[in-house]
Image (cartoon, rainbow, N blue to C red; front, side, top):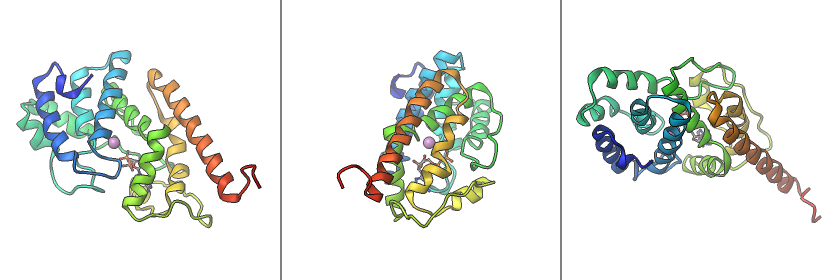
Length: 218
Ligand code: ADP
Ligand code: NI
């Protein structure tokens, strides 16, 4: 489903605002990421029987106040402008704070179904071919190297520690992406996660084989 064709006028209004703000962001957290998360999350919500209105709002808001990218308040004012009732807006705001990756050494918080669906959709977009593209786009935007053979991954015990990691893009696969398959909670998302996880594994194998010169031609 397209966000601008939602049955809810509040979702359509919010989608317009988010689209125009995020079209100018680029580091893998742009409008098209939000659009993919919205599409996956609404599909998962139908499969799992989650409340579609809250899922739509959460998907559109989930990266609006990511402090790696943006300082300041957007979620509550934009929900109010879109005509979302205060109690729903507060609920959405509270849930968005709990969606992020808490570090590979820390368990995920328990969440209601609506938030699980959006978190799974966000995680699916970090896997597979698109996940690979986003990781190197993010790394490039931060001036990170593709790979540094001297580095080894850390199992971060907190989100602050995880967010501070300044290593190469390839290390991000070991510090986050390869852990996500075990941290997908809705049954409908699991086969997709498995397939996208396997794609990452194949990519890493090929990348490291090429790096070492073991890819068969020499
Ligand atoms: P969350 O907001 O769920 O905690 P992040 O914003 O940290 O997730 O990561 C979202 C995506 O951004 C990652 O899946 C990856 O594609 C990219 N990304 C984040 N951190 C890094 C990093 N250190 N190196 C490369 N890519 C990153
Ligand atoms: Ni996201």
